[in-house]
Image 1: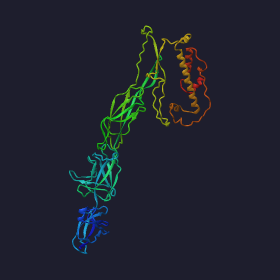
Image 2: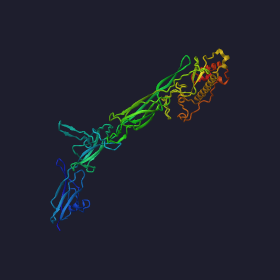
Image 3: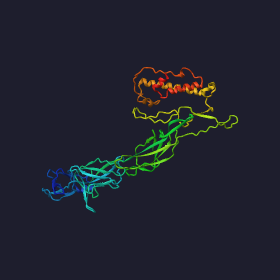
Image 4: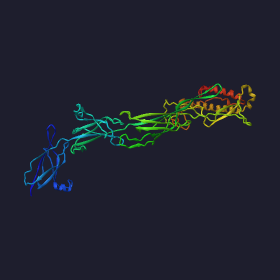
Length: 535
């Protein structure tokens, strides 16, 4: 039987002509006819050659036939040689003439891909700019462009596919991909991505079927937007009394709590990566907001056009039916969240009251009758909302409630008043005064209120509570002060004598006199001077 071996020398030379012997290259030998019939993987292996430190390897003596030899293990950072054929047709103990294979140093094109950090998809937008730095030389990779004007290029810009490929291959080594400009709608992330040009790095082949292409991806986060809603309305801030004893209520435009708004998409809103993924359909509800101290804001939203409108005006206000459009637009690659503000103003609900006095028998309108409008219960003025927390920040500002407010709430009463109010000289008629019982009830109510104020002052003194802490108290709400133990620093009782607890006024004149003295003594609610005066 005819047999003969073959031998090879494995080298690598770069562009300078310097040659390096390549050890550890592995070649596998299979019969060509069998490879054609059953495929490379299923064909029988006749020999495996491995080059020594001099790049030399010799096969066994192969039987007569035609063989295919494939380089199945490639030394690092060199290009593999193409498959080659060995024909055995002579019977000789001398190996066939040396075959010298020059493996060119491994080089690869770099394909930079811009990827959305949230969707994981390629950002199909142009104008991302990259640079590539050689870590070993600390220099940026570049090339000369000679036409139309010679210039050096070291910046690579993506097209609409979100990718860019270097025009020239890079030699084996370690590099960094650095982003210097983000695409529209994204934040710049200048943290470099390190990669290695090596045969050990995964790569594809270019369209020519032989040039390696290494893909390096760089993620960016899209810019988001936030819509802030501000709601104001007429709020009671003061009460003035004219010379006739009539109250005039003072309003100011202040924040409104518990107004509810709906935010909807004003257009179809898609993902920032331009992949066509629909996030919000036009007219889809995006978020519902409830104001606190007149403010409310959305979560982070994708950029686009939205519309905001009110669905609940808040207690005591007329619904504002205005629909306002807001567009969240990209500002720059340094701003992670863009904000847009939208304001709403509401009219307070008020009542125009008309009273007609008729004769009970003839139903003839009567003139000269006087009527008074009284509150059936306490009605409070503007009070700023307090967050439900244990924060005792001294900068908290709270509006103390007033005792009367100008709008009707269904709990007001109208009483007929005589054309003249009894004077101090008409004591004999006081018992017949139909309003006497009302004055007496008012005096007794004032007495009870002042007793509560005296007790409050006593507690403040005994436990050394500052007025600010007392002002923050809300019934049913746990506070930081209420959750902590307090030290009792005084056990002295509070003393005060209230006239209404000693004797009951019998006439309107007595009621008015005692009430005036009582009010004069308590102009400053809760002060120690009040107690001294009352005592």
